[in-house]
Amino acid sequence: MAEAVLESDIACLDHYDYFFRPNILQGKVAFITGGGSGIGFTITEVLMRHSCSAVIVGRKFDRLKKAAKKLEEVTGQKCLPVKVDVRKVNEVDAAVDMALKHFSKIDILVNSAAGNFLCPASQLSYNGLKTVFDIDAFGTFNVSKAVYNKCFKNNGSGNIINITATLHHNGHPLQCHAGGAKAAIEGMSRHLAVEWGPDGVRVNCVAPGAVKDTEGFRRLGGKHLPPNFIENIPLQRLVSRQDVADSVLFLASGASAFITANTLVVDGGSWITNSVSMATMNKAISKL
Image (cartoon, rainbow, N blue to C red; front, top):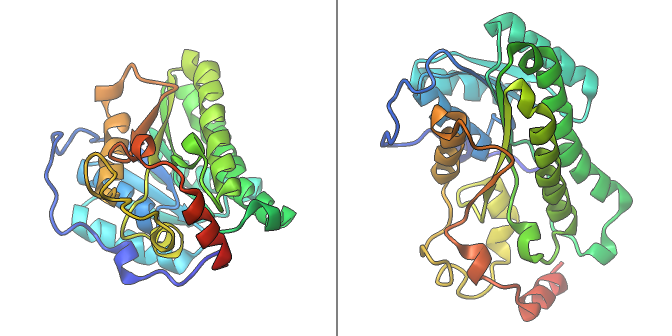
């Protein structure tokens, strides 16, 4: 399910245009799962570029330390790396406690930890399905519950942003497990938004399409994109990590203060125009 992370997965942006003022998140602390590489790394970078301190968590501490050092050098903000498996409640609780001890608060939670692989549903093992749901859906709940109980509930405010996908919007071949888990996250997010809203907590999702320059795209989408996929995207390109990060920034900022229980789709409109090709599906399955 995992491969060696390339240097590009923890590469900071060469250039960044500020659409919001650089200090819009000044004094805020963000807790980001999966923040050590890929989409989570760039989300962390963009939040920190806007004066936010960060806690990045993941299973590989060496990668987290390297990422945190690079993020601090580029942004001038503080970044605390913490080793956590989001599937393990005791580790999640300890990580949240460590974050609160270090920064005294958490204002923003971004759940971006995820697991995925290609597999036809007919060949999908119970353990394979369970692993993806454990990381994506149950991991999101574990971290959200811990941060809410230990911080948001008492503070009277909080902001949760869950990274999902568009796989379940139309249904995609070889992705029953991942699409099902992301759909579960979006449904759960609406329930949490309703329950925790009276405590001042907002819960939203960002659903990217195929994101270039990521481990997931190299291993998954890049191999099996339908013919003319990019040409069929209304905005005529793939999603970038910065596109996702800027969308998270919007939801993390006061500009979205009255937005909750929503999913912001960031895919250039491709979920509307790129229908599933049965021929492409059969061809992809035959190569596995």
